[in-house]
Image 1: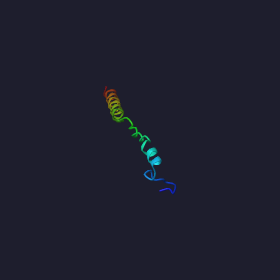
Image 2: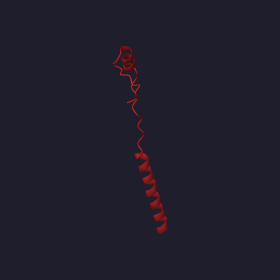
Image 3: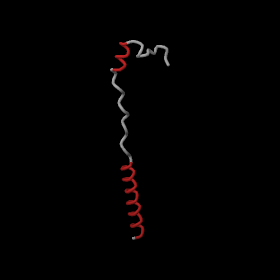
Image 4: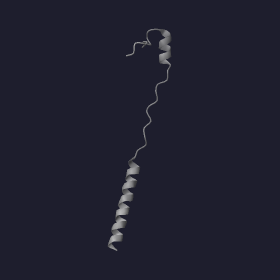
Length: 57
């Protein structure tokens, strides 16, 4: 711990300042990438099917 750490319970003013500080917001979760992966897989399957259909025609 740094040497200039002040225990908030050491005096009333420091404790009030410590207890009235807002808590840090929860980290923002990134949106799920699952729909993007599923969409890419569908596009690949369609393209492979199209190439196979054209190759056999």
